[in-house]
Image (cartoon, rainbow, N blue to C red; front, side, top):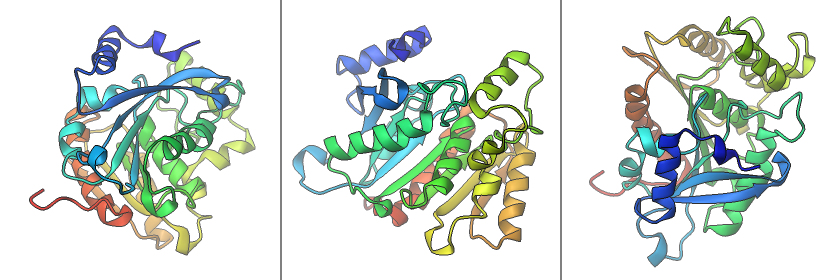
Length: 286
């Protein structure tokens, strides 16, 4: 099964343009993922402008999409390809379906966390000139991807030096934060995280994970959310916890909803903040 068959027509069209080389700012790659039962999934990748003419290795930002979107979302709905030109880094935008970047409780062939950590990252490090270490790797995302970035960054602090959450669904693994009365959505969440009393949920919960990261291994943390966003309170709750634990972080709250204009603006902040951490120094004049 190829997950790309489920893409909306407009995203499939964007994908086809990239495949034919009409969108030169990024490339589309498909891989068979062992931790997704061999399913073929795609990712978009932006390479630095001088990649083909240099021999250096580049840090990598893994940029995650939100719920109901797919991997073409960032290049389709934001100006990420424009913003990336000012930095010396590789940006990888992988497929995550609606799996919350978590190994499914119900289906062993939907191990989305293992796909990122054990399939995708080794593939990228093996096929591109990357800085294949924690110090050269960052992760960020929006909404469901904000949760995924924060969860993965805190669960695997040996792999990521910086993590950023934009309008993140940070309480996704906490049953009391249902987000929706839609029974189909609740069923999907239960399939991912297990029943409400599943003790394994704690291992997917940023509110629990952040307590366990050794001080010397804490990634740079950046969070932002709009003041009219339905996920505002859980972001405030997480930031409050960080303050109580005296964990360094940066947080921005501003007028805005759960929408692409917010994320298009905020990804520029993420690129700038993470650049000094992972060695993706902005070019002069950026």
